[in-house]
Image 1 (cartoon, rainbow, N blue to C red):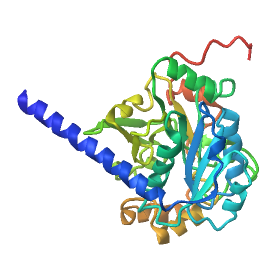
Image 2: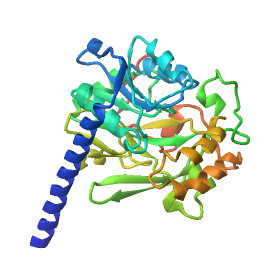
Image 3: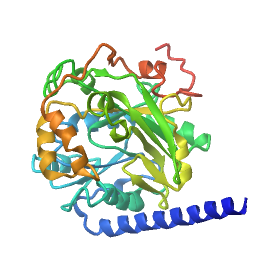
Image 4: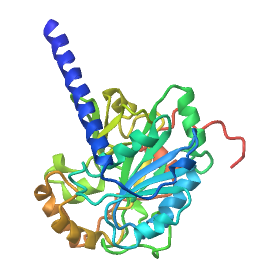
Length: 349
């Protein structure tokens, strides 16, 4: 009994120091950010904010910004990591967006999380904050009728500090490198299919973070080594406090209690899905680039075979693939929960 208490106390002590280390890393990384368009003075106390790091995403940005504006994001705080496709110029023209340039290594900055950590400390405290990648579109039950201000009011009234989500890979009917609709079509028309399962979740010690794996990338690329399959659970919507920090992308957080917000598919609590547009046609060229840049995995050599497989343009659709038909389908499949939500809808819609 005494030994157990001692181990728990030692673990808690180490996690507190880990959190302090990551916060200090973020504050140091913030000094390397060059402001290109700082409009943060316009942020109001109750605004919902979105944070993202990106590189060469100009083709995705119109839909990305429109999607989150429609959900109720009031201000975007973006770090651009040396884009050369016109992204910075496009973003500087957005009146509800603040932009910084980071010229260092994305991988060395903990895959951009040190940069975003600095902005979350400076600007996120006390706000509901969405932290996502440029290829992720958040949906949740009833999101066409109930915006993020309504959702966060619901969570806040119940003392819930955030909402988890499954990252759901979308893919085309044919070979990678193609799409099912033109470039200006919605993501879910261009990549209309997904795997409804299987997914599995484990609780990892000592942070209590969940580790959800499965889906199409495991089926197609990691069937012989499922432990290498990508982590699919995320915590993209959090009422931020300056003492919080993301540890591994948005897959896990400190303090550890934040990781208890989401257990993965099958969790009945209110949750979302991040529609993941990784497999748009440029995935083939991006995979060639990643074999050279080596910026997206802690151990790039271990995933070189995965990127080579992507460059071959395989067909991911199979007999069990499902066509995306909206958030209600994802709820019915157990891929996101809706307990106690949405509020009673009297619109008749």
